[in-house]
Image 1 (tube, rainbow, N blue to C red):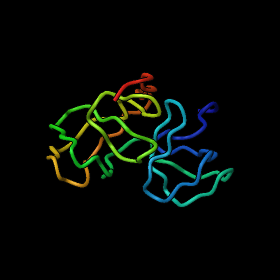
Image 2: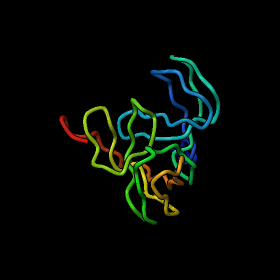
Image 3: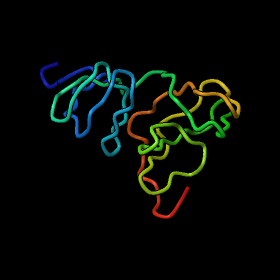
Image 4: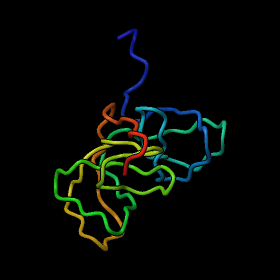
Amino acid sequence: MKNAHQDGRVLDVTLTSDAKSGELVVEGRLVGAAVTDGKVGEIIAVHVEGVFELPKLAAAVFAVGAPVNWDGTAKHAIAAAAGADQVGDIGFAVYAAAAGAATVYVRLTPGTAAAGESGGA
C-alpha cells in the first residue's frame, strides 16, 4: 500500500518534557509508554497499544475492566474522575488492583484519552 506510513502501535513523538523508558508520554489524546529515555525536543518511540504495568495512587482500587485515568503531575494512575491536569480514559485495568498495591496493569486504548475537567478529582 503506497499511502501506509507506519504500523501505528508504536509512534514517533517529539517530547515536550523529559521521559524515561516505560513512563507514560501524554500529548493530547496520544498516550503511550516511552520505549527509551528522552529529553525535551528529542524524538522517541512510544507504544500506544498494549498492556503496561503503571504506578498507581496507593488508595486507588481497580476492578478488571475498570477505566483508568492518569494524573500527569503525580505520574500515576487514578480511579477517580480526571480533574484539571489529569487525563481520563487512558485504558482499562487488565487485572484487579487493590488499595495499597503500587501498580496496575493497564491496556492502553488509543484515541480514547480526554482532558479532565477543571476543579475535579
